[in-house]
Amino acid sequence: MGILNATPDSFSDGGQFFSFDDALRRAERMMLDGADLIDIGGESTRPGAPPVPLDEELARVVPLVERLRGASVPLSVDTYKPDVMRHVLAAGADLINDIWGFRMPGAVDAVRDSTCGLCVMHMLGEPQTMQTREPDYRDVVTDVRRFLEERVTALEAGGIAPERISVDPGFGFGKSVIEHNYALLAHLADTAPRAARRYPVLAGMSRKSMLGALTGRDASGRTAASVAAAVCAAERGAAIVRVHDVAETVDALKIWAAVRDAARGG
Image (cartoon, rainbow, N blue to C red):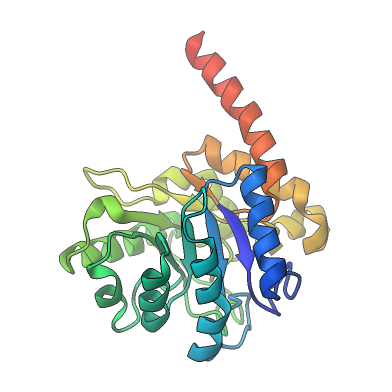
């Protein structure tokens, strides 16, 4: 999943693809580089980021969805606002990626009658406050899984078919930089809801502070660490990795998959 931030203030590339033409070129480049999905965001969710007014978010994302509709890969929109969900689905979006886990009033209603995929993320707190105090969990892996189980149950009770749902443990969203994030990565498969159906897991660690804390590099210098994290996530069962550096990640995953397949064949 290639990240397309149509925002002026995202933590790693804010403003770089804020113009419509730059965003289109970025999407086309990621598709050529091998992205299987494009995730379009019109509001930064970095810690402390201010909310974006509804009309402004719509102006950022709807034209991109309309222009890219019918592209070679499905389009995801990163939003928690029900009104944005309705507009982007009407414009042709294929997936809604919700950091709030469809907890906003009206969110389930906004997606119920569509056939789009839904990604349910765990977040402790909200972007404006989630990292202002040390997150507290009894056991982060168990607590995240239980939250995701509750959200999946609520969605299915609200009329959402289970095959539409994927889950995301929410790296960096209300977690301690080292302890919680790396526990979730180490036990990634255990964060998925325990049910008869296996829900696909999305892992999004690209350029995040959990990587900078170990490498000492700022966001622009975390490509190698981001690729390593994506491979670790794939090894631990991630179905989707959300990344900025598509070409590098695709190359690394090809090598990982070849080794995996050779080991299975042996």
